[in-house]
Length: 326
Image (cartoon, rainbow, N blue to C red):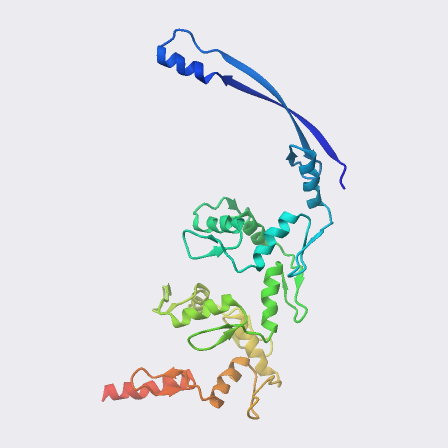
């Protein structure tokens, strides 16, 4: 138990005016002004020597000191997580409950805890009081700002145990680790494509949407995502910054260079499980696998003929364009 506590004496001065006398003066237009009485109250507070928090009694202070202690006596029976205070455990237990009693009045989201709802409500507010001193980006919550600040740091303490990638944030590492997992729990309801992350599924769903909000200012192309537009804009630039060290070829994008480098290697790591074919790139294997599948997802809008590959559909559509010319 911590012993470093201080007794703090605060002298609080209040200017107390007799409200009854004031009302009486107003009613009868008394010539006499009301008398003021200064009252000095001395309040005793206990202060935590670690975080300077104030408490009105020793019991509350002792309870608070457990937060600074490594003792976590209250253990969750569901996930094994431990807490210094029982109230913290009780709050945590709502996470395992399906009950989400605290509903947002703006959107359809609901929460198991009130403080989560209060935190969420800041998203709907235009107030962003927490500003980054490096890039001036603003945030509605201090936690978001603290997470963001790690982006400006060169320290990437969270390293992937599978590949060489490292991250400035633990949540980014956890997201990345799903890439190495074979579990793809998030499935598209339109084309059955699966994803390891919900964010990837949400991004993919925009492909099926007609809403391509990000338009190129140079050509007529439009994109579902801003990142796709930014990548596309490099095509209009003559700068191909990513050069191959083996041949003279250069590329707009780093991932294009990485894919190209596999060509100089004799290793075709992506092998078809149905036939003898192997490929340099996983995307090429995925395209090839459609040949072995009965699924023909790409349908002609003119004659309703279906194809297993988009390229085959595009070739087929030329047939209909020739018909129009005749």
